[in-house]
Structure formats: structure tokens, C-alpha cells
Image 1: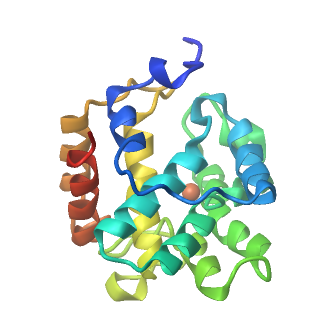
Image 2 (image 1 turned 30 degrees about the vertical axis):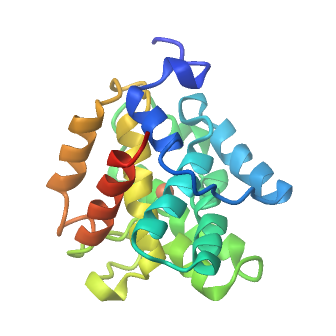
Length: 211
Ligand SMILES: [Fe+2]
């Protein structure tokens, strides 16, 4: 197995575009929340800083969607801890170097529900719902609740696309990062099924407007 890249420069060109997507600076997270996010990401060296990137990209996408600053800030707060439930998933399942059994996959899927429970009373009810629903699919078939369309909270729709973009453009043990064009094509391919189309269009705007 190849060692994970140790610096942003070793990662994909697509990543650089996201980081420089806007002069509109994402808020600095409170240190406790940032520590929690890094604790999650530290479980897997290949996803280093994933949570922070997803939060910053969610912020940028919400801006392109016309969200007001206060709600964007709330979304950034939630997005940075969107995978906090992974702390409760056994590492031998989370990092199993082979195909997961159905039961193991169900255990991994539980991270969004567990994360939301962990954040109850810590974040607002709306923010907790965004974390819970970040793996729901626009056309249905996602988890944990199998929501469809408008049932999926808007912030969760944004986090879902930001999360996918970061996964597609990141180094992974099971694949190399895609180019910007490949990554956009992949997100477009899931418009209307996995993703709410306006969020993918907003993502494209953010990426293409990057300096
Ligand atoms: Fe997740």
C-alpha cells in the first residue's frame, strides 16, 4: 500500500481549486469542535482534514446557493462534525481491507444516526438533522431514514455533495484522485438520484470560479 500523501501539494489538483474557491473566507471553527473533527479524521490517515474540507466546501456551496451568512455559519459548524459518529464504529470494520459483510456495512451506516445522537444538545435541532441526514439520497434509498426529496433537510443535501466531492478528489487506498473534470462529471452523473441538482450546480460554480 502506498503511503498517504503528507501534504496538500501531494494531493490532487482538484483539491487546490476547492481551497481557493472563494475570497469569502469560511469561519474558523471553535477549537473544541475542530479537535473533535480531527479526532474523527485521525482514525484514517487517508482522510486527513476531510472534515475541515467538507465544512469549508459546504460553506462555499451554501454561498453559491444564496444562503444568508448566519445559516452558512450553522452549516459549517455541523459539516465539520458530520462524521463524528465514526468514533463509535469499530476500527476493524471501518478500515477492513476487504469487502464488508452486509452486517458490517449496516454498522458503518449507523455512524450518521450515532453522530446525530452525540450532537443532541450540543448543536441546534436543525444542525443535528443535517448531520443525521448527510447520507440520504434525493431520490430515496439513502440512510438512516430513507428520506426522499424535500424531506431531506437542505443542509444535509449540501453536506452530501461536499462530502462526495472530497472523497472523489482525495487520495484513497483503493483509488487515485480524479481530475476536476472527472470529479464534476461524477457528481453530475448522480444529480437527481443521489444529489439534489441545485447543489451540484452550485458546486460547479464554486469550482469553476476558483482562481
Ligand atoms: Fe458520513
